[in-house]
Every structure is written in C-alpha cells, then in structure tokens.
Length: 62
Image (cartoon, rainbow, N blue to C red):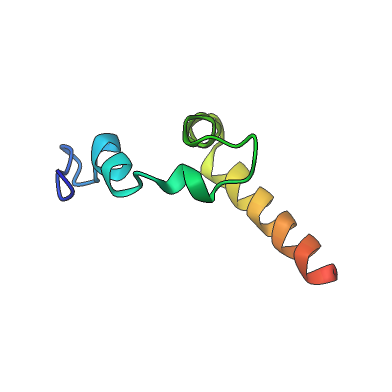
C-alpha cells in the first residue's frame, strides 16, 4: 500500500494516510489531518506559496 500510485504517478491518499498513521499525535490542538487536507484542496498553489512565504517572513522577524 505504501508505494501505490494513481494513474498520474502520484501516491494515493490512502497510501499517504498509511504512512502518516499516528501523525495526528504531532499536530497542534484543534488541528486535524482531515482539516489540513480540506485546506490544501481549497488553496491554489499560488495562494499556498504566498501563505508559506508570509509565515516564513513573520517567523524570521521574531
């Protein structure tokens, strides 16, 4: 299951979840893997990149 790829050659969601089993133990309170997945699907690549850049700039200002 860990190396299962979809028709485009990308790992399937089921595959990634299998690898990340237990990953929710490392998330902040109130953050879920499902919530993160929904947010990722909602954002465009450009918007996600902008948010990462802004978060990095805010972190470096501290």
